[in-house]
Amino acid sequence: MSESYLWVIFIIVFLAIMITDLAVVDKGAKKVDTKKAAKMVVIYIAIALLFGLLIYFELGSDLAASYYAAYVIELSMSVDNLFLFIIIFAAFMIPDEDQHRVLFWGIMGAIFFRALFIMAGAELLHTFDWMMYVFGIILIYTAYKTAFAKEGDKKTEDTLPYRLSRRINATPELHGAKFFIKENGKRLATPMFLCLIVIELSDLMFAFDSIPAALAISTDIFVIYTSNIFAVMGLRSLYFVIKDVIGSLRYLKYGLGVILAFIGAKMLLAAADICEISVVVSLVFIITVLAVTVATSMAASRKDKKSTEYTEIEKKE
Image (cartoon, rainbow, N blue to C red; front, side):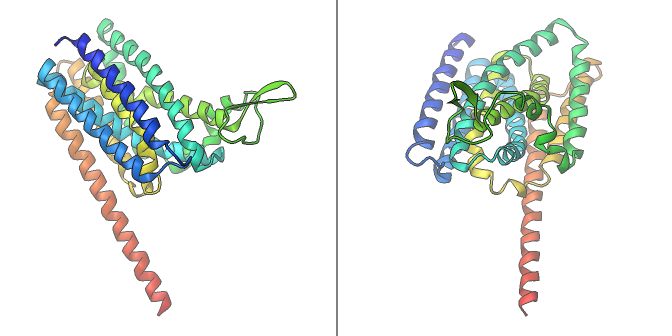
């Protein structure tokens, strides 16, 4: 089976998933049901893993390993990006029942722009060898920024996307789930649309970090794009599953920092012909770091919970 047929299969799977997501997650009540969203997350992950098996049987083990490594990186970095989404929704005071609509169109935009970024990045790496050094340095800088960013750095009002969105002619009041309204004969944007713009621009800025990380694994456009999109497509359902417990992943940023630093160093070492770290080794390293990060975060959260309960018991006594 050639890669062109795999593209056809990917497009069919993509359309089926998005239609199912709209029909299942958004069916009935406007507020997204957490159990339904959790089921969709499981389905998304299962389909992504199965697609990786298809790549293994049709394109070989090396590209399959690259696919899985890029998928894990993008998914883990997307989870970290959900912190920012929560802050953005709070800044625009978007109610829970309308957040899914903003996320859906935000993800659709991300799917389009990531295709452009991946093709451009892959072409640059193929054309200019020195771009390996540029991407490697970008990744190491991003690793430092990710691991040591202060919580105050994520204030939405101070970001470039937020300031740009405020230049749009808009009404300050929400009008249900509408993106635009007509007022005195003028077409005005609502805070829903401003929120969508900020999320879209934030994802573009986020892609400048995640795309080089994926391209450090492989420059095969099919492998990188499909792994990227499978991770992004599940982001909407994942948001509604973990938004209430995402604060428990306190050490995630450090794990991501280690992963990005490793990928950046891998790229620089390969560019300098010092050594070549295999994709399988990279995949094992990434999964191990994430597992340790999540386990440590959850253990710390449980310890804090027990400490809080013990303090409350002492106060009652």
